[in-house]
Length: 415
Image (tube, rainbow, N blue to C red; front, top):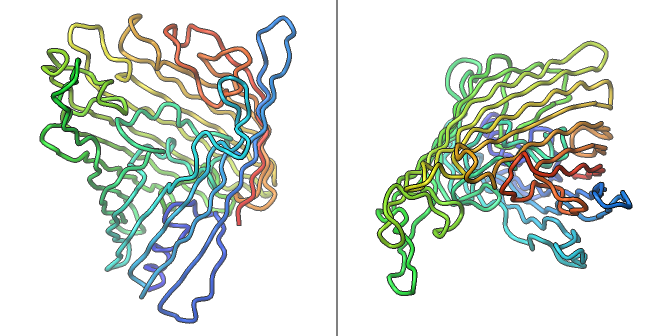
């Protein structure tokens, strides 16, 4: 029963295994309840390309989260997380969002689960879609970089990479050799209106769900949960390789039915391409003598939206690469990470092409939950003086365009 209870716990549901939580007395051994709070305060200093060569400063709350999770009768579970992102971050015109957020408060995760046997759970709700481990670090507990390489996640439809769905999750084989998540997600279900001046194509007219999953082979040790760590700080060595796939027929649209890749035709007569994503990754985290730790990870991912009818490619069809190396010496970890995405569309559409290099120091005050990062980032395409340096800007020139350099400082408290 302990293995079942652990699989249902708050840490295993969406935070990393190093995340913290406050246990709430329930007065009954049949129920277990935990709550957690996450606050991430950030400073972004962006180097301007003006003649003054000044530093454009922005102070805001990157994340402000409140979560609750628990179990009932050792086999049922729930997890719900409320998020308020980019609180106080400046808008495009330079004004601060006082007492507001670029992404106002919303329910980020909402999951119900049932674990009838150890290491096998059925879950439904607003769930993180399957992805590469390097694209799914725990933003609250697991990553060492300030931002994981989420800028090259091009899901066809999601909010914060979550969708409504149902999945199976668990382990098979001796010593938890294989970890899997397999399920179906809502994806696009469109019934395009036939009225209007320019009706769009029918997107997934058969109403089929998106299917997807990932499988990980644990070569050394194992990992639980959805949000995984780049470093665990627990004296254990881990190594794994994995693969992932997503597919939905006639749903190759970039978050909207007005941004679809068409196999043939145009307008209402257009036939939408199938949406596909697949990739692989590798991870190694070694505990070293003298309270030291070395970690490295890499991934490659293919986003396949097909090609637009009569055009050279589609700007979301291409290859992405990520990599990161970390060395922790006691409570301090220097690190370097990078990602790159290139579309197949040649010179015709480079608005999604991007790259980033980040290097910094992470100061662990108390495990992964309380820490301070100081990081230099180089993002292309960028914009001089852009306070939104958290992500690349859309540019027809892609990575041949201007570059933004910035210093990020972020403090995190989680309890």
